[in-house]
Image (cartoon, rainbow, N blue to C red; front, side):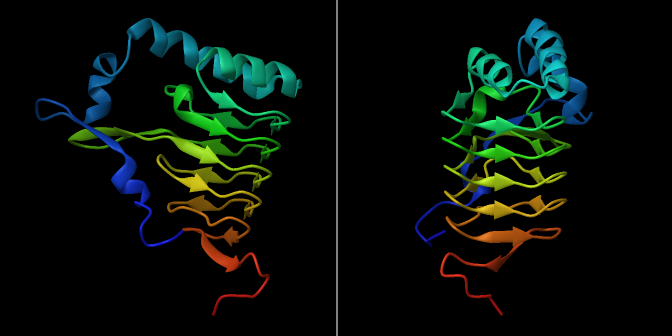
Length: 174
């Protein structure tokens, strides 16, 4: 991404929590408790549903921005608590057992941030995309990668943390 685009950390909404306990101990204050109990059950069901149309329709009903032709593979996990912060553009693919996280609970705060998977982007099996990350159009995330930063359009990333191994012009970065 270009230098004038904010990093994922700059796009995250930070929410401090009171007291000496970690932020996850305050989960009941982060969203409506009914939402926090029902939506994860729905998402867990979606992981097992074979129909991509059903997954897309349910995610839209939960507030996600889901484009045409999006495919979430069996076992793919959209964020269970903030699915409404997901943007899956047209023809994006999220592979088997991949996870798209729009939240993170830390010691003194929890953070939320929109995750954008660009048009025709592919997220490999078992990959994890952290909150606030934008994956560009036609980008590819290799299986089992941890995406901690934005992925430029057309790039291929891999590893933990994921790094660009091939750019849009198909040259290898050294």
